[in-house]
Image (cartoon, rainbow, N blue to C red; front, side):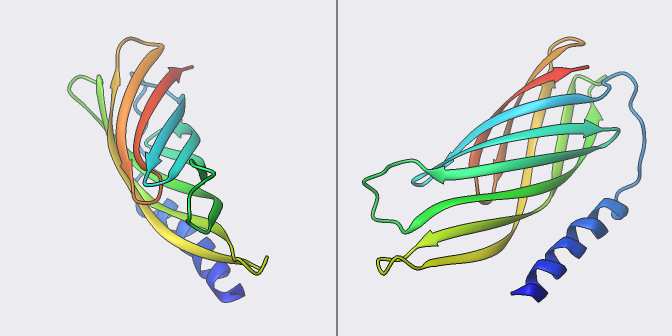
Length: 150
């Protein structure tokens, strides 16, 4: 398991170096909050844009307490590459992530697993301070976002 953790961290660090760093002064840095849902899970994420990369921390929890699924919760990190288009009103993003999920067994034992994930979507900037987004995350499902530029 230790090898998986080290490999996962290495993959995220390497993905930071793959994408070229270009500054888009028109859009600027921003903070985003998102909510998503997939199957019997709900998720929240908080992200921040730095030049053309978005670093996002996500948290997943069981949506229905009566569910027969043994999933408890998960958390992870996504490193997303973004590209501004259409006179800087739209942003497309895509990138990898790593999530750590916890599962409960009927014998009160906990099982954990690491999952490589991906995320992609589009964000619309209404004005200089507010925007909205819609995306898909392989572990968190369909996500809606609110963006605040600073």
